[in-house]
Image (tube, rainbow, N blue to C red; front, side, top):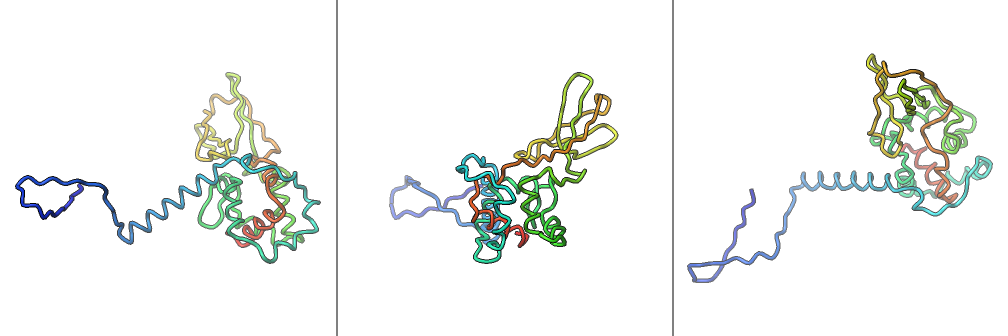
Amino acid sequence: DLYVIARTESDSKKKSLGLNWLIFHDSPAAKLARQGREEDAEAILESQQPLQARPFVKDWQLDDVREKLTLADRGRSFENGKKLYRHSGCVNCHRLGSEGGSLGPDLVEVVERLAKEPEPRLRLLEEIIHPSRNITDRYRTIIISTFDGRQVSGVVLENGGEGYRLANNPQLPGESIFIKRDDIEQIEQTDVSLMPVGLLSTFTLEDIMDLVAYLEASG
């Protein structure tokens, strides 16, 4: 319910009220909750912006950055790295800290695993530039053919007695497709990751270094 209390100095028995505007003041708790919702909404909007909205820069390969990796050591913008992480759609499928999806590996775990290798920073960029080069079975795309002639591809979310549930759209990781086990004629495992190639093609070298620094700092 909304109650409006007004006061007038008129002596008339019939009093009218002209309401031009209302100002609402949040409680401290409500203000924090609203700010949180606004930040979540902004993150979703940023993550759903297509990469084509940014101009093409370069089809980056490992040899292009191999000798420049020390640039990520100093003077980096974590704010820009976070923005790029969201804009490229990484947040849709990968968890980093307290946010992100689960279609792909947890990036904190990825960074920790790669830190044990001889060139962890180069290996991190290899995972981004060539997403299908080193892929575990958990995140490998499968193709299901059904008896009625359909073919459905995606990453397995569930494999139960009733059938398979697949996700196949990185931009909409919450959507899934369910295929009944009785309808399945064939299941083929591929060597392809659901993660698209070319994610860095709209990034400058400085952008790439900011993203690397942000990921290494685990957000």
